[in-house]
Length: 333
Image (cartoon, rainbow, N blue to C red; front, side, top):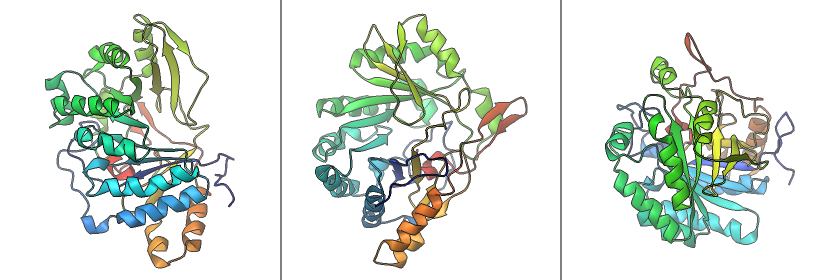
C-alpha cells in the first residue's frame, strides 16, 4: 500500500497514540490541578486502538509509541502491547515503545520487555524528592526511580526526558545529566511549550532556552555534535566523559519541523497532524462505521494531506504565541 506522505513530501513513519488522558501526576507545566478527565466511555476500546494502529502500520508507520496521560494507568493496557507485538514479529513494525512518568513502571517492566519493547522514555524533572513532588504536585520520586531501575534490570533502554524550567530546576540540570550518564541512560532536555489552558505568562516566565542549557553543560562535559536524527525534534550530542547521548528538543529557540515524520492520535480517536496546531480529524466515526478499513484509510490519508509545515509556538514580551488549548494529556505526550 502507498506510503503515507504529507503535502511537503515528508513520509509519515512514526505514530504516537494516547491510550488514556488520565494521569496520576499534575505536572505544573502540563496540567491544571483541577483537570477533568474524559468519561471512560468516550475512549477508544483497546480492540479499536489495536485496529487503528494496525491500519497505520499497513500504511507505512514503522515506529509506534503509546502515550497518555500516563499509559500504564489504562486498565489491561498490557493486552494492547501483546497484541501489537505481532507486528514486530512480522517485521512490519520496527519499534514499539512508550513514554511514561514511571510511577508504576516497576510493575510492568518485565512484561513490556516480553512484548518486544526495547526502549522506554521516562519523564523526570528533578532528583530532589521535595522538588519532584512540587513539580508533579503528587509524585513519589522513589517509585519513579524504582521503575527506572526495574526497566534497566528487564533489559530495557531508558531515556530520560527532562523539561528545563527557569527558576524551577535549572540549578540541577547538570546533576541530572551526570546522574543519567552514570546510570547508563540517554537524556533529552525539552523546552516548555505553550500547550494547554494554563496562564501563559507563567509558562513564559519558566521558559529556558536550551541554547543556554547546552552552554552550561559544555562547561562540565565535552560535547560533540552527532549527525544522527530520529526524524524528530531532538538534536543530539555525545558527552565524552559518560558516553551518553544528550538530546535538545527546541520547539521555541530552534524550530524542529522541517523533517517531521510523526502524527498523534488522542484516546478518543482524533488525529492531530501537528502538536502545535489546533486542527484535528475524527477517526472514531470511520473506525466504528464499518467493519472494513477502506473508509478509515481514506480518512487517514485526507488528514495527512492537511498536515501543516510546522507549528507557530513562540514566546514574546506579550506572552505566548501559537498557544494550543488542548493539554498534552489530551494530545498524547
